[in-house]
Image (cartoon, rainbow, N blue to C red; front, top):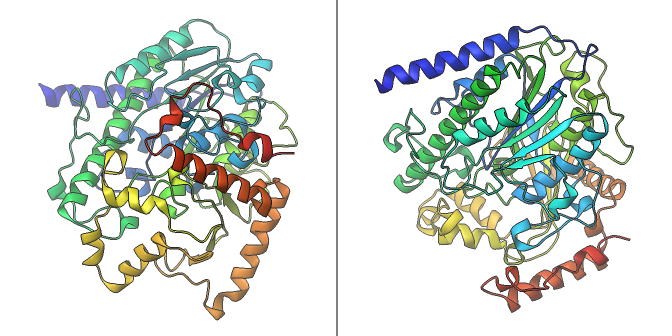
Length: 499
């Protein structure tokens, strides 16, 4: 019976997608609906990206009928800062959301946000799942439901049901953002019968590639991370099924991306590939040719300009990103030479400021302070959301290459330079290799130019010192994070990081 129900579910989802992708819409006839799906804490670990250990037929089908971006990156590898970019179209250092909203980090001011742009055009807007930026009032969706994080992964059918409820309220064009909790920690093997297809640790040979090391413990966590990906796919399938049942996909653009990489060592909270590189795809029938795999450099900074382009809203000059609709539609497109990312840590105890830039082949990380990376200690302790960290013992038993990799992560030099073509796992720092001096200087220049163009406050030593002093003093004064519940506590950085 369980097998039959799985088959029926898969058939329903498949038919819904076939119906949707078969519908002939037109960009010029009417404003399309826009569905933005965001998952948590996962890299491009989907079947369509070549991962054979997961079972993700729904998202794979979305990629087949649209565009899959193979070099898509986010602007920050922590949730609140990353999502602030999706709402404002600005880098976190521009909007001020440089740490977790749950730790009272906040934006500098109420920036014009995505739902506001769209509401001026006549869209109804909705957000399902957590918003996770401060102040929430700056992101005024018309409809908000399932406001918690739901890390327990319970009641995932509610996302689809609430989406249907919202769409049925009006015939006006809609923008619907659905934020699923997978694959955020804890990584559960199965919750309320989901996923239906389970990955067992004995089926795996290794942990995630960027982790570099493997143990039985790491394989356990990796298997359950993959189970989160399977459950995510089933959640998206339920969403598609419900929206298709009311013909809500007839004229709808769908964009999917992850908010940042998985929470394993050298992943989330870093500027390595395992932290910043994410899955991203888009489908728009009759406008975007299906079954495209694009290798151009794409950033989450492009999401707001792309959605504004879809809605025929002029992009404000202050937004640094670009619409990727022309690229996907085969029109003239100015190819980007570089991708940039922020980084400062999620909390004061994790404060570790850095910036990074990658070109077509090489990537540069600039670590702004000479201190030990505090994230490493959290992963080594293997507690809470850092349970999947690589143990000290596993590192000690590693070969010399990976011992050096983990040593660099723990005590990084000012600059790290990696050849992503020949070294995609970023194991050999080339910053002091004379043969790479030209590349190093080119990327340094590109990074400085970007910081100047985006008015990065941490490019100024005085402001960097002010921020470092504030973060360090709060970390010392509140070792048990008491500032989070202290009445009247507020960060001072919004008053001195901007003019």
